[in-house]
Image (cartoon, rainbow, N blue to C red):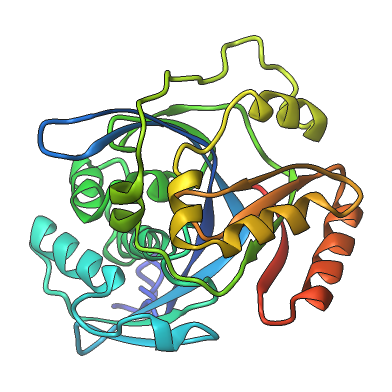
Length: 300
């Protein structure tokens, strides 16, 4: 470039980082079943300020390395959703998949908090930045849906109601700032196994109407959520009785307004009166059960 052309010199992208926040189902009703066997849901997704982290850099690839406390439980090869997301989007937009990826796995695997789906969504967001693709490009949503029912919600990364198989999203009241504690007893549960173990009928959809106007009030949220439930809890309890102990211990600390399992388990969350109560509860639970994964968090 001539020295006085007036145009800034282009800067090469070195590393792009994207968070992969933990996903919570604040409630989950199973409303039916499609002829192909997939269950229909009515759920409220929310996201916490803790999670995995993805780093992308242009270079020789595709490649994926995994570190972090749960790295050993996460596949580093073609079965990893993060790598699948890279390959799928590269094919969809006609780009060579020359990207090296690093995944810090801080969330338990097969835990009902969307770890793999959140990782895949983070890769898609990061690739949009790396390849200068508008995130509203319909190909992004198509690829997200092809990777799993939770990936479109994780791509959005904001509180939303989900219908269909979890992929039909509509806005929900903001959950920003609500204090929670996440607890996993160290048990992995495969979502298909939980759905197969489920018995009984179906539930009605139960999303909030426009009169729900107290999104920053934990007590208001607790009252609304107590009128709803997670329909997968009995099946998950049959496969992992430890979930019952988690829920009982979560309900014990002072300030817990509601305790519930997220998704297909085994992670549960407690909604608390304030952040001080959430932090105190997390410390108390971790002291009682040092082998459990326990984290205080704020919803986004």
